[in-house]
Structures are given as structure tokens and as C-alpha cells.
Image (tube, rainbow, N blue to C red; front, top):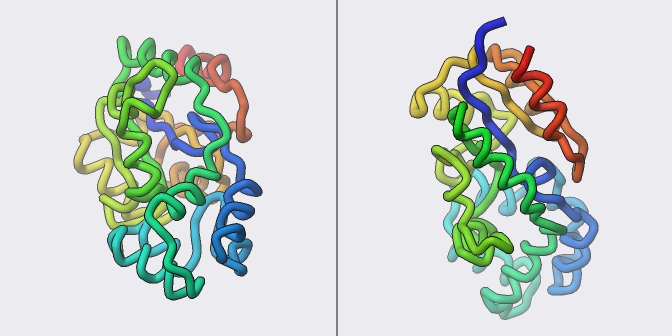
Length: 208
């Protein structure tokens, strides 16, 4: 096995515990009656997907959501609904990333949007008062890359930009479809469950 030099982490479900049901409930609360159809744990649908793959910006998303609900929703109401996905941000996982960075390059590869990232990139992200960027060598987000996982285009963008070699990289993601694409591109992979403490499993792979 090639020596692993890089580790790529997903965000939601891996570093952050997700609550899909709470997110649906909050969007229904602000008037999105078809929230169950539009919100997916791994890849959104409709204009919810468009704001995550960068096809539309935040202002356009908010306008479309107001039209969709027929309500003059404030930005804070919309952000409140999106933040329903966030159940917990375990500090121990983020601290572990800092330990890993002493030996490896650590990257983020996430399907996300500017609304959630406005929180993640602030000091409010963690109990330690650090923004998400403090924990990675570089971050690759879907709305900035112009593609969402499992589209191979977002992987290719990261591979070229980092740059990194998949055979020297461990990819950790909770979605089977993303793991399969990663494996097809030559990454070592690990698929944890939502909320799992995956530290020992990752160390086992790194020490092989």
C-alpha cells in the first residue's frame, strides 16, 4: 500500500453530527411544504441543490425560497432553517484534525452552501472559538467548486488544485455514493456512520 500523505474529510455526518429531521421540520415551519422532497442528507434537490453547486448565489436562493413559500422570509429565518441540519460539533474530532496535521495534509471536501459556511467560517463554529478554516490545510466546498459530490468533477478539482495523488490519500465520507466515486478514482476510503467516533478506525488505516 502506498504511504498515505493526505486525508480528506467530509463535513456533515463525519465532523459535524447531522439532524436531517430537524432541518426538514424547520423548513416546514417557515413554509416549505415539500421540504422532505427537496432536502436530502447527502445531496439536495431543485434550487436547494443549485445553491450548493454554485449555480445560484445566496440572494437568488432567498428570492426563490420566498417565491416558493409565498412568504417574505428574512435571511435570519432562512439561516435558522438551514442550521437545523447541525446537531453537534464535537470538539474532540476537530482537535484530532490538528494532531493529524502534524504528519499529514488535511483537506475538507464538502457539499455545503454559503449560508451554512457563513457560520462555519466564524468563531461561532466551535466551543474553542475557531473557524473551520483553522482545522484544514485547504477546503473544497461544492458551491465554490461548482459541483457536488458524487460528481467526479469536484474530486478532480481538488486533486489538481491541492495537488494530491489519490493512491496517497485517505477519503473519509459517510455517503456510500461518494465513497464509491472515491474508490473509483483510487482513494483509500473509510465510511463512518453519522455521529461515529471514527478516530481509531482512521488511525488503523494510517498505520497499516
